[in-house]
Length: 131
Image (cartoon, rainbow, N blue to C red):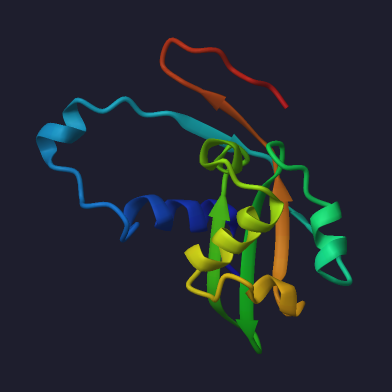
């Protein structure tokens, strides 16, 4: 089973939404490092129960779908994503499913595994948020 760190590393290196950086672009980039807490599995009984266990703007979420023991879909959003996009909770989870290559409403079918996490962030010259 892939860890959240592995999923994040894969995502940053091969995100199909963005073209690869050129060497010139990379030299001008400023990088931020996000330190995630250990993801906590969300035990839920139905979509409403799932929504009640996620704090919008505080919890990042990971979704995974398995066929048997094989991981077939997964994705991760950091906690600030819904605020930056102006999403409510349904949009947060729906867009996460879409990012993972699943239908937008797949999360309402109760067959997915979700985890939540929080994070601290450090920017060059910026402040560090501690968990």
